Length: 577
Image (tube, rainbow, N blue to C red; front, side, top):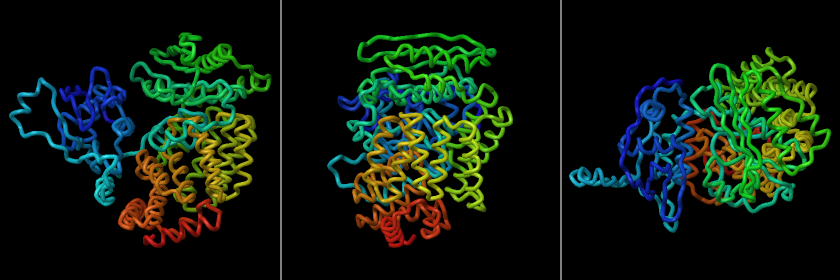
């Protein structure tokens, strides 16, 4: 839903919310010695909710207050809520700060203490009191049914529409990694650790032009993909919070950042490449071109960045870098919009993505990545049960994926899509062959490591899967729901219920409607004799899919290890699924 709004946000003098001290002017919150920076929109949402603690604030009211005089979609608010919860250490499943109320909006359930300018009013009014008290680290866990009944309210949240911001971007969901599950991955090595590592941050957009937002995210994604083609360079997607980056969580020596603005058909791109070890800027350039010159700007960017980094580029890599995916701007824009629709993972948006990919192909019949996108829409039709004829959908998926490969065999993403389709077909050996090919073409391809990790668990090697997923997290520190799902699934089969739950909770924080994550949470709870919690999850699964039947679900599920299938089936049957 798009909403045109024209109201000003309401200021608030709140200085403490729950355990956090709020500093609106600095866009930061603090708790003891811990300081967390918020994006301005996240701070605005927090302050607006804090201006009426305990009250339900509708999504429309939040959109009107935080995005005045701008046309925005529901997805913008959903993304900000996800980031705000992450900063507060909150979860959708057992909220202590921001609670979602189904089909109504959100409310702040933590205590709010007002600043000096409201001291008199606060003294005359009944004191604020917490509606939900955060659990202490040493306290017994709350009854699962209490927090989970609150979590039922999240089903009204619309899925976040995101444009791929990492290499490939086929499989990523919204949200950021880096919470409890991801922090344990930082010390692990990844292939090529001795090579220079550059972190590509999401390019900022000056202004509110949605077309520029689209192009900026496309530029970011293509820079990650292009730089990843160089074998002597490691590439990671940058964290959005500068405070996190300062803590060294990406361990990158080089950071690439930029900003995009434009008007009247002009495109202005200002790019910076910094060396964090030397503490200086290596290269900076401002481009001011017609928007139709986007691809020439991208070529110049890659050429100048590589010239500024201590890397050697082979002739074969130079040749691959020169092969732009398309030179047709209309095709490129349709493709980017298709990527955004695809990542929502809803049936309607999947169909929208398919039509957008076809529009891209009509504009450029040789656009291989658009054919790969078409393949993904049919593969998801099969995987998520949207197709009336699943076998026919998989046949279309493999046909389009092979078309993409024949057109551009040197594009890593086409091999990733073939790997994904073969995984759905349970042809795991063939899937791994294509993923290895993708990694030879793009050694920093996080999604390829993640999918290999998922396959390792499918074939009975979950410990190997954990290692591959650690690599994926290192290369993409702010990955989304699916990375956490895969890690949680691997830990379940390793018998580590605590780590499984941590990661599955993170998957659901980013996507509350992730059916598979709830299936594994039910199995984890049954494994640990948390029967009430397991029954609660079974109820949530039926709420998502009333006709859910575990035997039918497993019939098309790519898990091929017989012992693991039986273990999962037994656990789910014991909770009535």
